[in-house]
Image 1 (tube, one colour):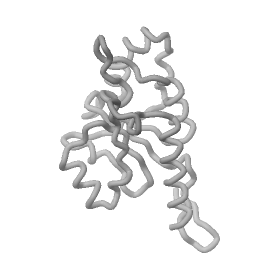
Image 2 (image 1 turned 120 degrees about the vertical axis):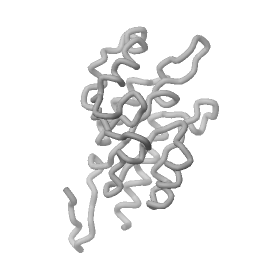
Image 3 (image 1 turned 45 degrees about the vertical axis):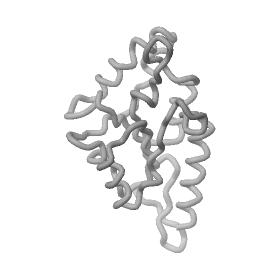
Image 4 (image 1 turned 180 degrees about the vertical axis):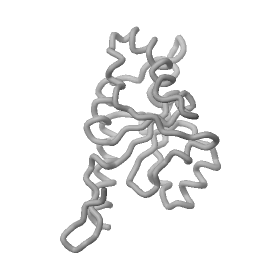
Length: 165
């Protein structure tokens, strides 16, 4: 659904911004003893739910598998952190087969949280004019970690751009 401003231009409520979420390297980072939940996992997930339309875009969810693969991948880490797995309820599966970009709805504002998109996927984003929608996550560099502060900044930028379009 597209909302219109008084002059007829499209206006997107912030809840209609989609977020596509990878797991490995994004919600799970490499720790001293293997994969671990990111710091402030709960806070990040709650913020995403409150401000975006959330979708899994991960190798753990594809080909009509539903969200079960994502939950299975995260469940041991959630148990260890004493986080109820129902925190993930409501993140919808994004269907794709070969390239993750197959699942992206380019007709709506979105961000894609990923640590390692393929060069072909980056090219598709570029050709679609959506290269800025990719949020590269790299836990080795402070500025590129997944934090609520970073996502808030990105969301504000998207909303400003939508208001000015």
